[in-house]
Length: 402
Image 1 (cartoon, rainbow, N blue to C red):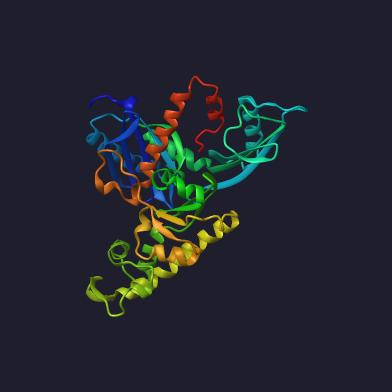
Image 2: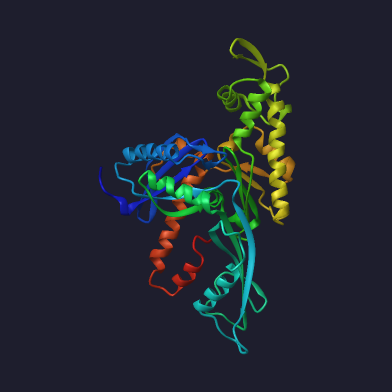
C-alpha cells in the first residue's frame, strides 16, 4: 500500500449495529473520498462498548476494508461519541476590564472563557466540546469575536457538551487495540450537523435528531450557535424488539419486517394488506398490525425528545423545524410523527456528498462519518491558517467549537 497518512482524514463511527470507517484525502484543501469499510459491530450493549476484544475486531475489519479501497495505510482517526451518557449545559462568565475603557486582547478572551468553563461537574464527566454562543461587551450581545473592541466588561456564554469519561476511554482504547491513534473525539450529533444542516437552518433555529440503534442524539442550533445537546434512550432497535415480542417472531425476522414493511403511522397502511411469513410455518401477517406495534414506540421517542427540548428551554426555538438523520430516520412515518408531536416542520437530512464518493453513501446512516471528515478538515484548516496568528490563541480556548 502507498503511504499517504499525512494527507488522510479518517472517521471511525462505532455504532451498536454497524462499525463504519470512512477515509478521505485532502485535494486542494477539500476532502475527497478514497475508501470506506462497514462491518457488523460486536461487543456492544445498549450503545456502549461492553467487550473490548470483539469491538476492536470489528473496528480492525472495517479498517482493513477501507485500507483496501483507499490503497493506503490508516494510522489515526477521529472517533464519534454518542449515547444516553451525553449531557450538555449552558454557562457564562464575565470579567471587569478596569475602571476605564480599553481594547480587548486575546488574553482577556482566554480569561473570560476559563471563568465560564470552570463549572462544577462530576469527576467522571469529560468535556467533548466547548462551544461559544456569544460574547457580551458592556451589555451589548451578539458579538462573535471581541478582540480589538473597546469596553469595560466582557462576558461570554458557552455551551459545554460532556460525556462519560469511562465511555470515552473505552472508545479510545478500542481504537488503539485495532491499531489506530485517536486524534480527536467528536459528539456524533455535532458531526452529523456538519454534514446535514445548512447555515440558514442553524440561524433560524433547528433541532437535528440522529436516530441510532439504541439511542437518539440531538443538537439544537439557534442564531448560528449550539444552544442545546442531549440524548434520549430510544433507538431503532427498540422498534425491532417491539415487533419481535408483539408478533412472537425472531429478532432477525422482526428487523426485516421493520425495514421492508414498517410504518409508524397506522392510518397510512391499508387494513386488508397482508404478507406471508414463515414463523416457522407459513402464516399471513397484517401490515396494519405491524404499524400498530411501531406507532406507539415512534410517539414515545418523540415525546422523549419533546421533553428533552422543553427541559433545555429550546422547544420554542425551532424556527427551521426538525431534521431527522441516522438509520432510524428512514422508517416511514417518522416525519409525520415528528411534526405531530413537536408542531414544527420536519424533513430527512441527507449528508453532503464528498468528491468521488459512491452515491449509496449519501444516506442518513453515513451522516456522522461524513460529518466527522468535514469537521476534522475544517478544524485542521483553521489550525494551519492561524497557527502563527494571535487569533490561534482564541481558537485554542474553544477546542472543537463552532
